[in-house]
Amino acid sequence: MNKEAFRKISYGLYLVSSVQDGKFNGQIANSMFQVTSEPSTIAVSINKENLTHSYIKASRVFSVSILSEEAPMTFIGLFGFKSGRDVDKFKNVQYRVGKTGAPIVLDNAVAYLEVKLIQELECGSHTIFVGEVVDYDNLGNDPPMTYAYYHTVRKGKSPKTAPSYQAEEPKAVVAKAASYVCSICGYVYDPATGEPEHGAPAGTPFEDLPADWTCPVCGADKSHFEREA
Ligand code: FE
Image (tube, rainbow, N blue to C red; front, top):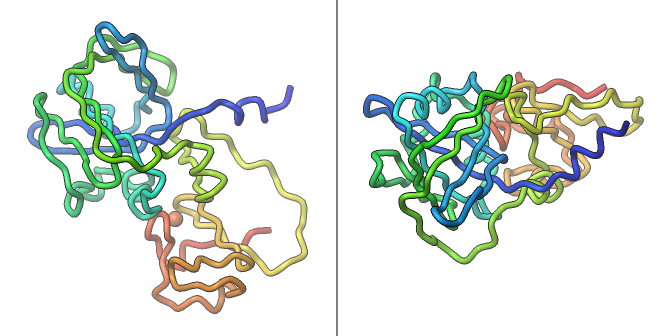
């Protein structure tokens, strides 16, 4: 059996938000799909450890922002690799409160769906929440981000709590300028390509990055990076 089979499943990239006791939280989810059209229902798979999971359980409402291909990695890092238990993810993002009371994130979204929970399916580490879409709108004409685009073009990673997470295969020893991996989010800094959008032209060794340089995905500082074997 070849694990590559799982990598060939297609997904999008979504921001699922919910509310509990007036507090908002949201997280990145790749496993979301429409179930029926009349009435419009969708399903999303959420890890039981995530704060958004408890918010959805409590309020029985959530929203889904469909992210643009242009969504910055720092934005995906904030919602995908940080916990609402540690940071207020809504502090610096544009959102509005929807009909259900769930927040709807508008930044980097090309459309949104607002959902009332109708069914839950327990699935080991995750719960599949199925809900009726009670409001929705189109927010822009950029292409929506696919998971494949996120991984291959944007070089994004999956957190361990994602349904599609796969542990990295052990790598053979590679003789080239060392890459460094972020121990928080799994982002890999490759000196060959650098990170031109974040002040690191191609060819900049990790050691030469300024001391205040931070992970473009999750914002961790250089001390959280480990040399790749
Ligand atoms: Fe990181």
